[in-house]
Length: 147
Image 1 (tube, rainbow, N blue to C red):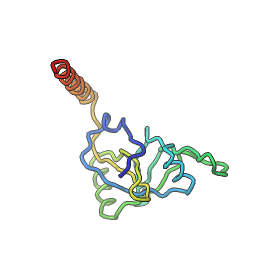
Image 2: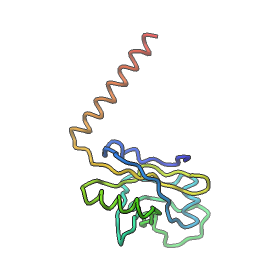
Image 3: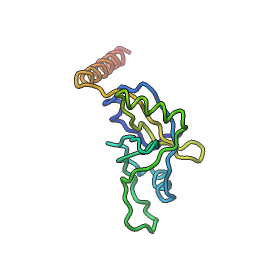
Image 4: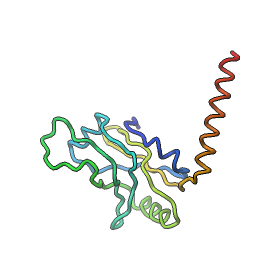
């Protein structure tokens, strides 16, 4: 999958256990806008309504050449997921897990979204993540200076 946009905050806020690839129901001008890279996953999440998965709060900018009036860039968009995966997502949500988008990309000619299932990190977990990242950076910097 050729990645167009990533939710960089998701790896910091959540501890991802599983990843699922899903399709998105889009209008034609939205697909063109995504292919141009005008999508933001910041603050977006996946919700379950009427036994269907919906992408909520993702911002897809209006396509520049589209003659569309009254366009809502953050409208909910339906996700295309297999029934078996949808039942698994519902059971995970009932057990306290969060479902959130990780990235959007193009697979052949279709626009796909990678969804993560995981628990939210506590503040001390986030601090440990920052500490580990800094330690790895310092070690790499040290070895780079030696050679």
